[in-house]
Length: 326
Ligand code: ADP
Ligand code: MG
Image (cartoon, rainbow, N blue to C red; front, side):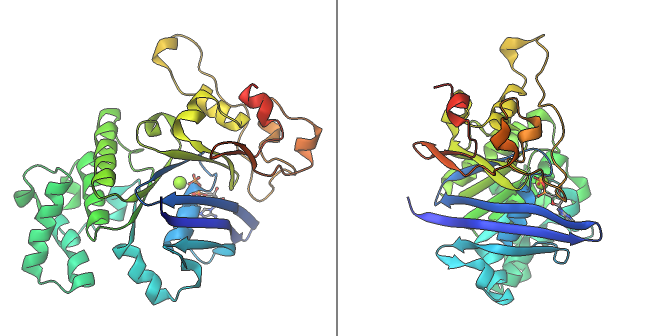
């Protein structure tokens, strides 16, 4: 498989009045053409900030990339001019956000916003752009597209708005889509439909997809592999099915144990004790150690490296063998 995106040792910090928040602390992950990577972790673990740094939409200041490389089709995006980056963004990579209502312009019709992509990037006429907008709405299975193209975002349901966001991302047939909690704001049944749509489009167009979520439950069927983040670091990477069977990091194990399961109704749901760390004061050693049932002295002093723990598997835990249970 050809590598599409290669993020290497990425560091991002926010310089705030309260101090420097170390939001991303050496993230390394890659996505091949046509591959789906799920990035998982509790709120505040640096999933979105990593994505913003990749897309070049980091809120800067206060956010700064202080180290690392973001190789996209072999070129380091962090070394490109602003103009070159803008060309890549939109045409070759696109992002879908959790909150479609705030990502869409409330005073422009959905058709105008979809068509804008073609007017700006391809110099298309307004009329042709509107036809393209209808095509895109068909593509994302919005019923009665030809009528609805004139409507405004607030006239669409949450699920339909998220489809509009997906249509916008698909407009220029990008090679990579980053979807940041694309279904988190939706009802459970609608969540599944939107996730199915995204997965279908990903397959049909052979796109790379980064699916950011805090919910291990939603990614099992769509992701090829998973990267688990904690306090701005990757603590485990794995092909998707292996991780469900045998997690190699106690944090992943905790996340898995906290998914509600139909076959264990009535059983009290496990929750990882404690809270994610304050990024202004990340604990020494393994950042997860204060919450970890397996922590030993070394975990409180030394930052564990990412160990190779199996085929395409890595874990940043000194006790990965014990965690795997072999
Ligand atoms: P998540 O994993 O939930 O997507 P984020 O990547 O959004 O987490 O945020 C990681 C951390 O980065 C936050 O907890 C916060 O400390 C910091 N951060 C994010 N955006 C900003 C900002 N605009 N200003 C200051 N700090 C920020
Ligand atoms: Mg986020």
